[in-house]
Length: 396
Image 1 (cartoon, rainbow, N blue to C red):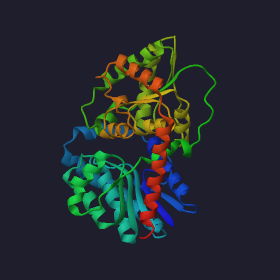
Image 2 (cartoon, rainbow, N blue to C red):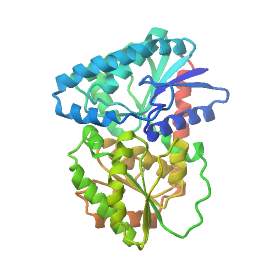
Image 3 (cartoon, one colour):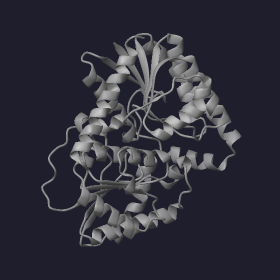
Image 4 (cartoon, helix red, strand yellow):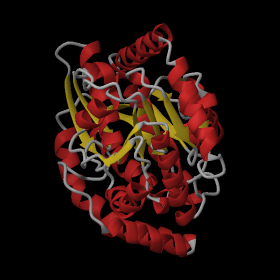
C-alpha cells in the first residue's frame, strides 16, 4: 500500500514535525513494507527557517475585523494553494489512500486550516482515493465560512475512517459535522506519544543537578490562538522571570528553549538577558540553542527532570519519556491532553497561578513521577489505534 499523509510535516514548529514523524513511525511499525509519503498541507516541500514577518502579520490580523481577515486569507492562501495543487495531484495519482493525520487541523484561525484542508481533500476527492482522518484535534472556533469549508471537504471525500484525539474534539465533531452525515469519529491517542520509541533517548548527562526545561511561546501567538483571555506580554514576561528566579533559588539548572517557531525564538532572544540577570547564583539558567530537528527536541526533553510550558507537543514528548511536566493553558487542547493521561492536576494558567504554586506543583510532579505501567499501556493503545487505521483503509 502506498499511503499519503496530509499534515504539517515541514512546519518550523518542531512539535508539529515530531507528531508527523511519530505517526509515520507507528504506521511502519504496524505494517512492514508500507510506503509512506508525507505532504505538507501548507505546500511546503522541505524545511526552511520561518520568516520573521509572520509575527507582524499575526499582530496586524488581530486588529482587523473578521470579514477583512477572511478576504485576505482567501486571496493570499488561495494563490499559494493553487500553485501547490499540481504537485499534490502528481503525488496523489500514485497513491492508494490518503490520511489527514495528527495535529489540531480542524481549527479555524482566519480560515487558515479550513482553506488548506478543503484544498488538499479536494485533490484527494478528484484522485478518487479513499481517505481517513486520524488523531486530529478539533477546536470549537469555526466561523460560518470555516464550518462550510470543513463540512463540504469531509462530505465530498470517500471517508472510511475518522478518529480524534480527545473527548472534546469528538463532541465538537458530532455537533458540527454529524448533521451532515459525516462518519462519527473514534477516540484515539496522540501519535506523539510514540516519541520515546521513534527517537530512542541518549544517556542522561552525568550530573546531580535537577534539570528543568522551560518552553517559551511568544505572547502574540498565544493571544492569536487562545481559547481564553491571555495576560499581557509584559505580565507574562515578568512572571517567567520570577519563575526562573524561584527555580534557581532551589538550585535547579534551568534550560530555556522553544519548539522552533520563529516568533518564539524572537521572543526568547528578547527576554533572555532579563531572565539571566534575574537568575539566582544557587542554580543556573541558560538558553538552549535553536533545535534543528524533531529528534533534537525529543532528545533534549528526554534528559530533563521536569518540563514546563505552553506547547502541547513538548508536554506530549515529556510524557512519552516519563519526564514529569507542568502545562499552561491557552488552547483547550492542552487541558484535553492532560485529562487524557490523567494528569489534569498538573495544568494551570500562567500568571494568574502564583509562581510559588507552580514551583510547588513542579516539585510534586517530580516526587510522584509517572507510572511506567500506565505509560506503557497508553503507548500500546497508541500503536493499536494506528493498526486500526490501517485495517479500516485496507478494504477501501
